[in-house]
Amino acid sequence: MTSLPDLTLNDGTTLPAIGFGTWTLRGSDATEQVASALEAGYRLIDTAASYGNEAEVGRAVAESGIARSQIAVTSKLAGPDHGYDATLRAVERSLAALGLDRLDLYLIHWPLPARDLYVDTWRAFIRLRDEGVVRSVGVSNFTAAHLDRVIAETGVTPAVNQIELHPGFVQEQMRAAHATRGILTQSWGPLGRGRGILDAEAVREVAQAHGVTPAQAVLRWHHQLGAQPLPKSGDPTRQRENLDIAGFTLDEEQMARIASLPQRRLGGDPDTHEE
Ligand SMILES: NC(=O)c1ccc[n+]([C@@H]2O[C@H](COP(=O)([O-])OP(=O)(O)OC[C@H]3O[C@@H](n4cnc5c(N)ncnc54)[C@H](OP(=O)(O)O)[C@@H]3O)[C@@H](O)[C@H]2O)c1
Image (cartoon, rainbow, N blue to C red):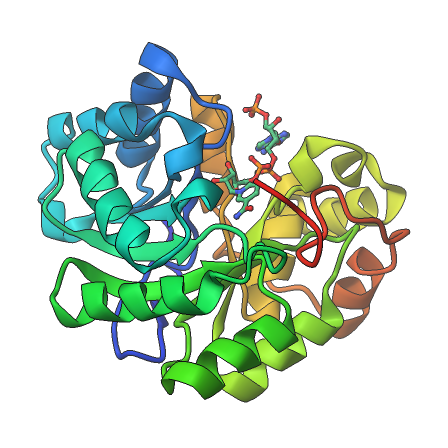
């Protein structure tokens, strides 16, 4: 297990420094791979209603033998469920699928500004938090303008914004926006989905200098930025490798080197993405 200290959210709760991503894990493979991640030491599992694997994730959590209080489970509200009442129904479906009576973190998966329901959705999230149905509430793929609108209209700042972040898309402005608002940055696609980023010369050289793998160098880079990476791996050896980043520190030049890759978004644009 990582010996990195937990991260404290703006609502006073804590989460592990690294989480386990489950996008693309399906069926019995998902249960097996989440079980192996829990065995490796992950204590934060990131799923979403739209991943179609909440039941499989829940089974792995239930069968792990690890106390429920020791595992944080994140889920996300899907696009068709935006709106106050729809959100209250959607969380019940996610909890039933997961077999849990409470989520540790619930996120609005995408802002879907064209539908303009994310503020109402956020109001329902606040109610769910106040009623103890979810421990912490946050958002995903929100821009600074989306964040400011929910904060201005409800007075509640999301604890987390989960955004695309990796050496090929370093999100300097969003990280600064989070820092000034006290929001934890969660990094999705932290390894750039494994494409290109891990083979980049800059990343390989920094990794070599520390005798670690490119994935470890990149995950350490996230950690030193103050972000919480959510790497996904279906391979037990790589799952362990991705947790093992406490034993080395990147210097300023190495941090900058990793961030020097050509910049390109891999996923959707928050202002236009539809779900
Ligand atoms: N909020 C959002 O909109 C959003 C969007 C996308 C993703 N996410 C979340 O973020 C999580 C992570 O993102 P992601 O799954 O897209 O991409 P990722 O974690 O950046 O990359 C996963 C890929 O990297 C490979 N990989 C993992 N560890 C490796 C290692 N040590 N060495 C070499 N290759 C390695 C994996 O292959 P193997 O499995 O074969 O190891 C897989 O192909 C998702 O699973 C999901 O939970 C959220």
